[in-house]
Length: 396
Picture 1: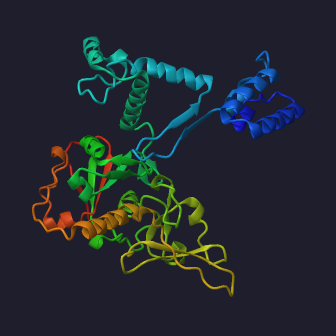
Picture 2: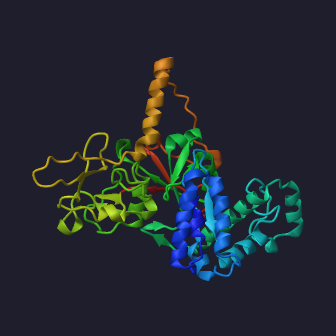
Picture 3: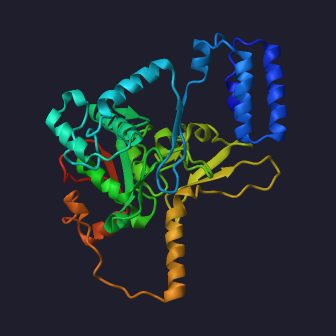
């Protein structure tokens, strides 16, 4: 609360006045609640600039911001922003023509999409009668519809760090069969499987097959130094490919580079690629304080990158570590199964497993049982393609 008040002091205020205001706010913070601090701070700001003449465009630009907070447990996230007059003018115009009642309603299949200026007035009127959304929900759905149009028109470009600039989502085949759980986007966002199934109606699906359900996808030898688009997609599809492979790093796939984990390309290394954020990718080397990496060749972590922080000469070596963040859902499922076994005893095996129908959006009926078992990841690159298209990504 104190920082929020101090941030509103106009830059034109003299330096000694700012210091006095900081001391005043520190004194207030000792004995008052955050709500009191805000109220008393407003009084102080009014005293510093009683006529409102010191605040100018420099202050408005300095305070501009837009933040997207971390996802909450239910998958939603809060966005906060302080808009400049220019952006505010554009946002309000957007909402004026896209956030009208009846427009861009995701819960109404007959709701017109886009701008109200291009919609049939009778269809808008009929949809508005059925529309029970609040003004804030109207704004949300209007922004979502606008961004969907931007993605479909290709206005964001064609490639970002080797990945197509589209909504890229991966899901475990077992979650797809159950139509439950969460899928993961290349930006690290979790999407409920039911929402993914709806998105897949306009998707180009890819099937990535992994060796024995490990993280070993395709092998490219010394084919290329830089990762191809297919390699980037398969890297993200890996069980550990959604974040940087460095232990404790959570930078998402859209912000990582491809690190030659076993031996650097310039030294004759193969294309053993693993995701690594720019910071950690540049910390790989043979000096103390740098990282040594290699690909695990056997065991449950086969195909994953192990990182070791180099120590000073003579000091005992640090242990190798692997980023365990992507393992959390799988490990939780294993713990839950053990708990249920302890409580209820072993469950009987049944051959009557639910079939993968996905509401006739994605058809896997031509896949053999072996393929369905090995297909541990569904990677959907979401941009308009005919429904039902299924492209297999198989090594030559």
